[in-house]
Image (cartoon, rainbow, N blue to C red):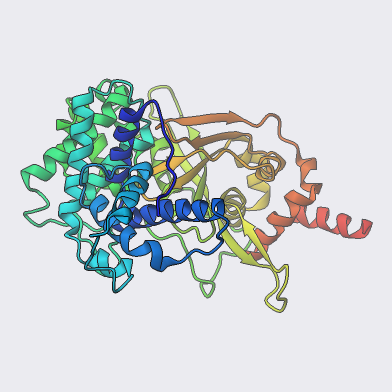
Length: 463
């Protein structure tokens, strides 16, 4: 029962990146990856042999052994090719036995693993391989290195025995969490990030928040940052960094039963600096809040957005950042009485636009606020880093239609990208791809927008 594998001329680099990858996964995620790789090869072999049957009894018991060895960080189990090769070796052995062959249950096998020891072993394997390689030809991305930081957080977290999930948002102040070996491993992981983001060790220590999600950073030992090479030598830099690490955001998600603000009634504009972080960059705070909002996402990609305005009364004053609208991707039911074609996905940008109009009023937003505003858009990549999320083909004209033409969004390389959408164009409100989602967003928040109502009335009259 030999399965096909692929070959590469860069086996050493492939092994290195494989070690980095498996160190970033939970045991459950790794089990899933091993299963998928072996199952895919098994199906390909059967298809080549003209056999379309995929009998789990033929491959799953041995796949369990491979998954356990990979989770324990044993040599030769670092990537998909390795897993398939080891599967071939084990399946061809007449003496192959396993304690798990009777149950055929990956969940039961997962429960038997010493989770913390597995995480530590895989992380040490990856960090030692990087050290011996001196990062030559590794070409690791920011995302891959942040995965190592994620792996270092698993050592301090409590894995749930049933599902092997790790809560990186929950603080653990036990003596083990602060143990020297854990801090050293986290320091080594952070030092790898400094190598791919050298600005962290020079002038921009807070740039780490562009690359790593805040809940993950809050899980790490505070001493590991400076020991890992983050430049916190000045009191100003240390205060700013700690202010960001200590941030807590309130839950913006509201139940449908909550009362809404009357349409057009203004709320007091409050500066983001009211969070008692006067030294912190407003843009970083906007990113972190948008990321927090993105975690409310219920559909596919987790996107969050905040619309903000920056102002400065005079050159000697600090720039003040004001958030006027907040949003995230979610479904909205158009008509509870219908069963088909009844749901629309409200994108974070559209939700943020509606939120701003709800709280500040239509005229003030269109005439004053939106023309000077910028929208920050964030896409989460799992629970540890970010992805690219420029406005989609529908949100681009929507933003221009309301007058928001300045965009900043996250990228997977630890930087934020700026985008100029061009001139605003209120005539775009007539576009069906613009007024349909905006109408749904306004309906959800029980607000009225006269400009949009006029457009919809004219559109319906032409039908």
